Image 1: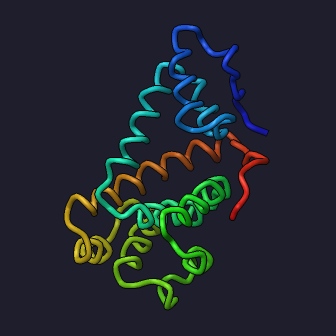
Image 2 (image 1 turned 180 degrees about the vertical axis):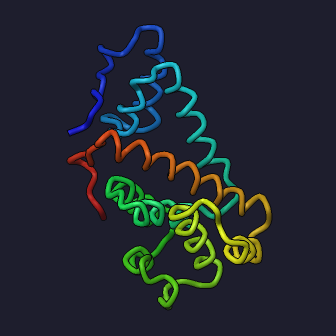
Length: 180
């Protein structure tokens, strides 16, 4: 059970109701529980929606690489909620099911090329210890320019923050969130 309420639109402060409506528009109705949990900080909800939208839609990196990084964060942190939500996003973005199923064995799996391995290796390393070794960073940079690498850094960092909200708050996977 979540440690914070999931506020309904009627329970949301009138002064911030436009942000709640944007959440419903941007994230669906019903919205994901993580956004409902974050709605307990009404003054930040609209900013978070804008930030996450820009991080996703303004990225230069291929969307499936971003999603591989996010699912890796979920796996490395033991956050089932994150994996459940981004599994389907990764498939829609172009990741192959076999890649997702073999993320734990990415180093030896034939499903990954060198650039994909560099992304997963970075996301895993940064999740387990934010002091990423030079070898991991240099490999990422060998495959991606600075902007693309920063897209991976930002997605990895943001979703590491997200899992550090999901787990302590006990955010539950929604009944409608099923892996494809």
